[in-house]
Length: 70
Image (cartoon, rainbow, N blue to C red; front, side, top):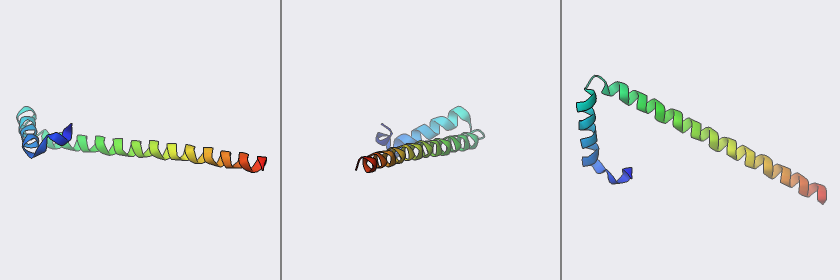
């Protein structure tokens, strides 16, 4: 969806944001947006790492079960 915006669309969105919020609020909004993205990125990394750890634990348990049978 966002890949279809392009440079002209992005410029239009930025001009509209400038009109709505004014030049004094835009840096604050940008910082808040950046923080939100970084927190989201770190949270998703945490979820992926947790999922990988669970998979690793399950694999180790399966290996132990096979060793006990053999």
